[in-house]
Length: 165
Length: 335
View 1 (cartoon, rainbow over the protein chains, first blue to last red):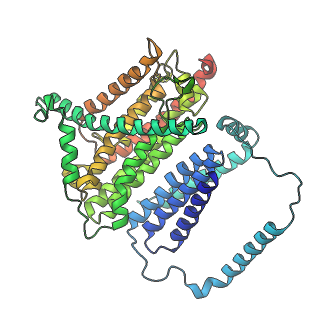
View 2: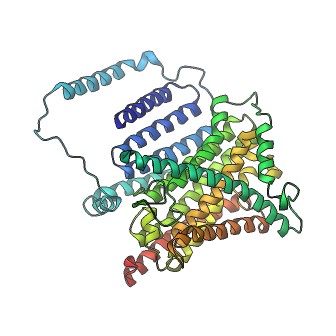
View 3: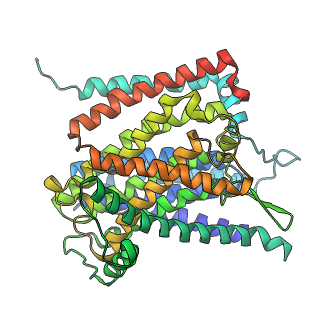
């Protein structure tokens, strides 16, 4: 039952991601990407991580993609008439990167595991997660929030209308 | 047989909630029309059945038998699913609402929410942020300028007020020490959280009113500017889904206001009265929304954004600090 649900959700995630990167109409791409995030969130939930699932929907599907959708709607770009990637110019690096990823994954799949014990699944309550985040990893949290603050100030500066040049 | 019992209970609960909520939503429409009429010195619907009680039935029959029009300019697929997104996300939110005390059936304790997520509060916020898609996509896919304006206004408004709504939930989560709605209700067994943080309750109510896109926050469908906003082009039952979605939304948001700040199903008397207490509290909040609609004029769009970003968000941030400080000072955590 769980395995069936997992494969169905994985298929949905892969299919919607493929659709998202191949659509010409930007709004359709956004909708498919949201669908992909949603299937990922359900997979997280099935694996016993409801917090990650909720954050995935809340932040990626609910906040970031809404802003994408909003901007696409505001700009009224519509469907692209020309191919979005000038295929002939950029396919070299893409193939190199794809080959590297493919071979490293193949090595991982077919190599013998380095450890004898398989890693344990840990079920952690949101409370424990929060405590770890703000005690053990506080430096990383602060660094990321500073980065976001800089981005915010930068966006504010760029977006400010020049009233008196 | 025993192993499938939990599934069976979940399915029964889901069906019951669906049935009760949709019926309540239909009667919510009638209640609003009646109350609005009374507040405006009219009678309201009183022809179908005694006191107009069968009016919702007549409305549904009318909506179902109307033609389902697809505009030529519409983006077919998205146009067809957008109403479902609006109604679906709202109905799904009900899965985590504990609308009564746990009931013992045949020795098994049945919790009232369909699923008691340990991230229930986040689940509610996630669902309401998905609801934005319904409005935005409906506006965009209709292929009409009025709808597009309505969709953009609606989504901008909902994104803005989600912030203050989420921040207004933080005090409740802090006081209960849990995201689970069951724990939040359990923590209010003696004193509801509204006593500890009345400001958060007020901010939550205002944000929720904006989130449900009703007067005085109905900029997304302002009929004198935008015909009917994002659902201008919809007809028949697809329009009905937007309509029902709006009223289910009022019910679910009232239920959540009760759960987070008014002590949930707790009340005097025996435990089986808990359903009644929950219903009564939620009905008072829902009445408040109707009352607000009859009383207040629509805000201007800049006033709406000003209220959200420059007033409610800073205020709710300050309130989070204040509640945290007071909770530490007076050891509120173990209320």
